[in-house]
Image (cartoon, rainbow, N blue to C red; front, side, top):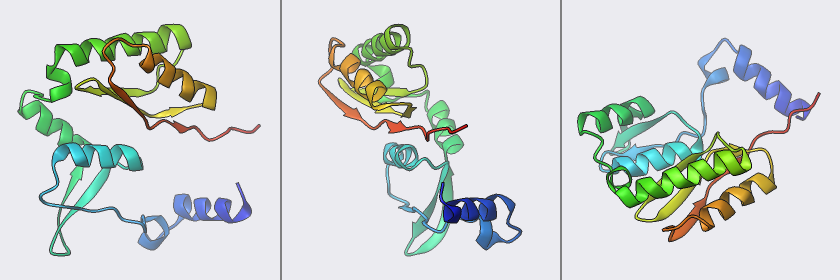
Length: 155
């Protein structure tokens, strides 16, 4: 990390004012945005909650916990979880990732045969191996590889 980045991180972790610790690039959604789009937004941007606005005014906040509560209340009726084919694809792929490659920290979402890979890996080889594993899983129609890289740790 550069000196500037270290200084910014220090301010964020030790600051005493809201301006020191707040997020300045706020991502918001309108009330009409479907929950699956909000879930994708949270995952893609590595955030835990998103403000909901109406006519430019804050009307609420949706958190990851809110999404889980909504799913539980509806009996978790999600297409990817209600389709037995998608469940089999997901389980097969997770098994392959874990046993053949040693990757256990990524999330796999399967909807109508479309595999989405989410999370972080340590190298480009791990990212590609996850994609190859998905390509070799029966029933997969296409793959969206959204895997990012963990920051390098220096001694």
